[in-house]
Length: 386
Image 1 (cartoon, helix red, strand yellow):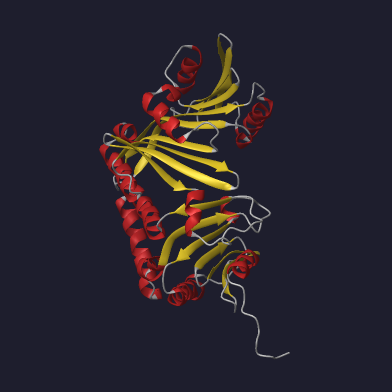
Image 2 (tube, rainbow, N blue to C red):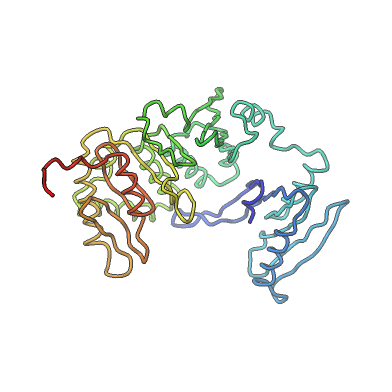
């Protein structure tokens, strides 16, 4: 429901308790959700009331109503939740505000009515927002990574830094990432602070189309994104970031699992698959799916060498997963004679195939075949057979 309105989510503070195994448990958090309802919070207020009726009771839950000037807010505490879980909500001017933590609602009121400093007026953010044009953006993400690490214990701060390093932003102290649509294209830019340098980076957009053939983006697509990335670095970075966020024992267990899978299948994901991929990554929304989401769009990754070898490696890995790892049951993986792999779980999909120039992923075998037939049409039959 919130996504029907302009909205913002902010993490104001966080702390965690170290565990003996090297992991962490959330100890407290302060956060805010601000929704621009244009002064008409009825839908959201009714939804909150429904949640209260469903999940709270007088035995465990305490509700109180307070006011200050024109602002009226409700506070929820529940004996089943930790003491720091204090939830407040109310209308603040044209915004409907929901906060987590004992001080967050007062902090927001302070910005709205008492001249408190807002992020928009902070010098670094104002400069970065001007350089990439936050106004009119579909999505903007800001992070003060140095401050985040400062607020947690040394062990968690080290994990955060390791996650940053996995994504190759280990030296970034602050960053602003912005996505917007220009006609059909998704444009993604970033401003990052590295030492004394504020650097603008272009991550996705129409500028990268010039490397591709004219027919790569179907004319029927209503949205597309072209990313100039490095699939090997992206995949390994995501994996390393995930492992860095885990406890040492959990990370070691996960590494051992993937090492054993690759040894038994005879396929190295890094050397036998990722090494064959080039830097062009394309998303588009044709053919359209019944449920429109990032996971149901067509994704294409360019191949820089050895498509035949890559296809054989993918077949070998997925054959091992199908024949050895998956137990008999409703969830299965299938491989059709035309080279399309797909998951079946009642419905068919997602699906994957390797062409001469592209690896194609889609939400269904039919979507993958439609993309294949457009990019790599079958050669005409010249045999004379009827």
